[in-house]
Amino acid sequence: MSEIFVSILLLAGASFMILAAVGILRLPDLPTRMHASTKAGAMGAMLIMGAVALHFSDSAVSARAIAFIVFILMTAPIAAHVIGRAGYFTGIELWEGTVKDELRERYDPDTHKLNSGLEASPESMIPPKAPDRSDQ
Amino acid sequence: MLDVVINIVYFMLSLALLFAFIRLTLGPSLPDRVVALELIASVVVGYVGVHAIDTGVSSLLDVAIVIALTAFLAAIGFARFVERGGLKNE
Image (cartoon, rainbow over all chains, first blue to last red; front, side):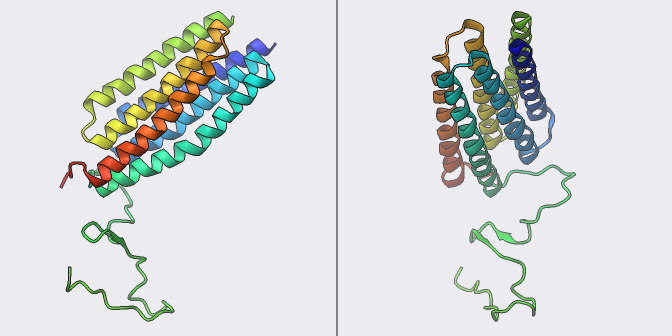
């Protein structure tokens, strides 16, 4: 009986992996490729580790497999965030069909500063400082 | 039944590895290659898990944990390199 569950988990994990690989091969630019690979790849590894935990049905092995799942759950978003941030800062080209890039008008790649976009509006509580660009 | 499933899963993971490797060789910029490397590490972790089920050696889980840890640290290091000292595209 548990063999069926292990098989289902393995096939689901491998399907997620192959989906991530197809996404990383076919999608047009870095953020969309990361969107495919980091989420689906982590999900595939987690499902396969769940299959391992179920197959051995030993408390020590299961504890290690669950610890591994928690580890992936914690590190995959951090790695994806760091790589995406580095890629954006080095000025990768986005796909020409990109609908929204909210950082484009707010982020200044020369001074490495991010504006909120509310500096000049009257709603801002603190009186805005004039952007001091003279010394740059 | 599990043997057949394990063979199918090996084949699917090999296909995923092939696709990720094509992106690793094509990848126009360094961050693309880093993403492909991360996916390759994740697929290898899947391989190790399937192999642990196939052979019944539960110690292979430790190998998977170490591969995942190394891949995470490599991703962080590559990201720092790209951000601080890598080639700029513009």
